[in-house]
Length: 255
Image 1 (cartoon, rainbow, N blue to C red):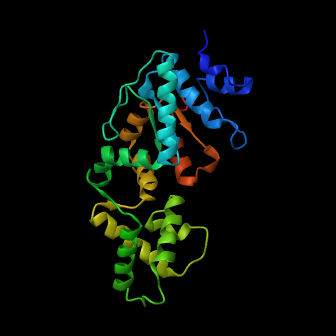
Image 2 (cartoon, one colour; image 1 turned 30 degrees about the vertical axis):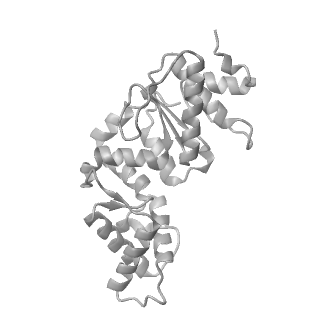
Image 3 (tube, rainbow, N blue to C red; image 1 turned 60 degrees about the horizontal axis):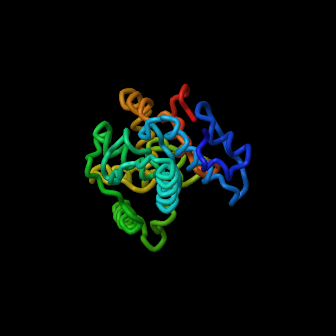
């Protein structure tokens, strides 16, 4: 017997919800129910006996993640399944699916495995004010005129590099020509953050990617952790987000 929550879906949506193996891409216009399909698919998998902790669902904002969590819990409760409440800081990959933002996932992975890249578990995440302060320090250390050289363009360059998975020693590969001081700034910026066990927002995607791709033991653990990986608004993923999802997805179990 099919769950009652499938009643409001059209045939294509039902097919997407019920497809539990292989890759599935749902393409539809805004407001047509893509997120509804995704949350009902999470609930359907659990009802069908998939261990909740084997499910990873990624989105772009904390608000969207919270809404998806509430929807999934409501759907399951209506079908007699009550998921336990797991605090955000507690790792649990058995009793509850992980529905979170890409960056929240990055934080989790770095807290768990950061020692592999010499990053302390209690690392600091810089906000924009912190980044500006660090940038001004570096501009001063490089003996650049602070009236001519502002933090904004330098930090934008660093962000673009990280979104293209380029570390400071590979920044020359970025798809645009820039004067050498941008590359010099990136090297100093990266050194300063690492020496203070700090990361910025873009590091929450870049560093997990580097960590997993360079450590086969970590990669093996994560390949067996999530058997069903779903992404809300997949078309909006950037290069770093897509590469991270690809790394985490076991090809024989990907959904």
